[in-house]
Length: 269
Ligand SMILES: O=C(O)[C@H](O)[C@@H](O)[C@H](O)[C@H](O)COP(=O)(O)O
Image 1 (cartoon, rainbow, N blue to C red):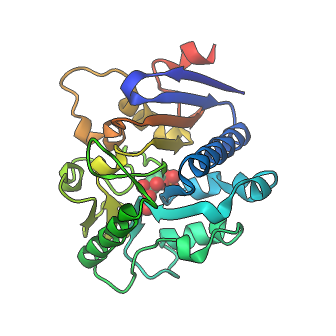
Image 2: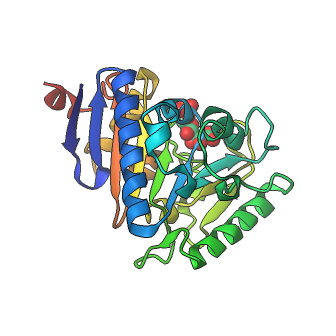
């Protein structure tokens, strides 16, 4: 069973007793947004992350979703990627391919992964170029307020340090504004070389979901969502800076991840 509550600009909270409820509701959420986007725009532009997120999407490969979702209309991107070859165990592309994309009929020409023959800096520039072409054709919509791509849905996990995509606490990549995609060669979470959507791109999406499970992330969830004192530095918890300008943010949390939220006891009553 889930409880839901609003936290204004820090998003809607959905808290689940167990992972089974969470993954079922999460699959319903993705399937519904896919349906609405396809109805409205003819395509569904979705950006994935790495980590446990992909295993939490596993229900989408099962019925009814495997049969009811219009997979041929999906265009798949990565909100962040590790700069390694596509068949490397660290590759977010490989993770998604093995756990999701090879099990559903997404068209290979609609899977927009990074060029793994390039350096991190070159791969970021190349990925931004690819994205710009797809924004021109409106495969990915554009935000009128920011001129950034407006993804139908960006899916993020969160690390125990509060990072999302490859935007880490206190790292200069959080501040990047001019670029859509930036790169790191010193990621605190291995591997060190990565590319990542910048915050303006994440915050221009129509929908953003942050999916978090486990007690190890409870403090970061608290710091990302609860009201804090004025001295609190949001740049130290990148997930707190995810605040879509014209879109909607939803947090999918299990009970352990939500256990330090000030508002969780009210919500769970
Ligand atoms: O490539 C990456 O490392 C990810 O995109 C990263 O942002 C991930 O989503 C979080 O670190 C959460 O990962 P876990 O869910 O595995 O903790």
